[in-house]
Image (cartoon, rainbow, N blue to C red; front, side, top):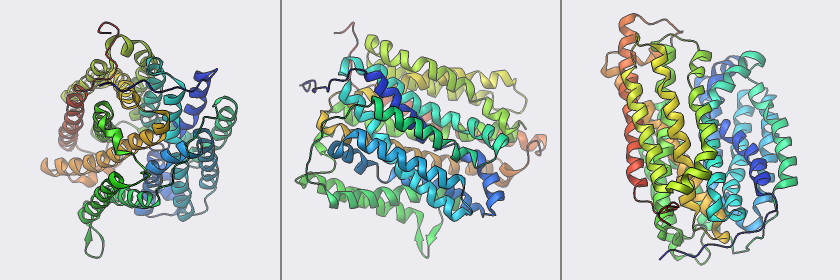
Length: 488
């Protein structure tokens, strides 16, 4: 039986509220990838080691992922607007500290606090959309929300490269300060103050979920730099991740019995919510592993500059940004969430397979760029119907909790995708007789034979993301969600 349509809070200017919150949401998602292109400059400027430099990114992702479940519930209890503005203020202040960091230790600490601020912001954006739009009008807003997430992660390396080249690595942090102030002013003016619920806070659930997510995400991040070796003494990365999984299982068992659970497990009785979370997990895996082999192929195998390699991501970002609101607002309403999601995910998988064909040192460079357009189409079509299906039957009281689960699942998927792609790329390079250290050579330093082998290894790695998106399409095929006007 289909759950009743939840009550929606009246809002005079709902789109003004959405755009106001998306300023901050775009900023926090951008910071997931913008720093990667600045790592060499940060390492040289602060005299940091490679491990310390990697932690500049890892600290942010940990701070973003660990509190997400709690942050969603905080919005339900204290109000989405208040928690969102608190998160944005923390994010902007931490960015200011990071921009003037005298050493890498201060920068790592600032990045962790940035992540916590971003974690407070992220679920509130989705929860507010759920609460101010009725389900039949939610598609365009969810389409815009989803496209911002995907596009920000793709635009990050492009914008980072421009800022570092023109103003130094400090600029990638300092630019967040005026953007954060603008976002605070817009949120204060346009985001409505919504009603709150005051359940008892689940402290034990918070501890179990926080430690579980921390161990899993930390283990996956360390797998990238340590190649799945040991972390402390005899403790291996596999053991660390296993301990995190055990804690999360204990958390789920406890939530089933808790009087005031942090995450109401009844949410997963809704078929669309459960399937959407599985689908967004796979999308997180695929998106995180999407750009790595492409950028390495362009820079190392083809010998192009970092700025030129970032240019190759532009078609995806532009096409996705233009199509996403149209897809979420009109196409999903006409064709239904299931059809649009499956189409987008299949296009993503087919585009990546198409890319592999042209992963050679001599292929026409325009043919290498062409799949970026179809990836943009797939990117525009997959975010909104999945998000819409996940939130369609959420009650206003559970909007924050549901958004927290959804964002946490996506973030854990991204961590797994980055670790898996790094491991696979190294394995395929070795299989093709290429020293993985060649990935760090200056642009154009490889011999023709090395370039060919390197390109083949990156092409092999792309099959992982193609397979992940194909698997996500299979899950999405079982969604019910919005049936489309014709069927209704």
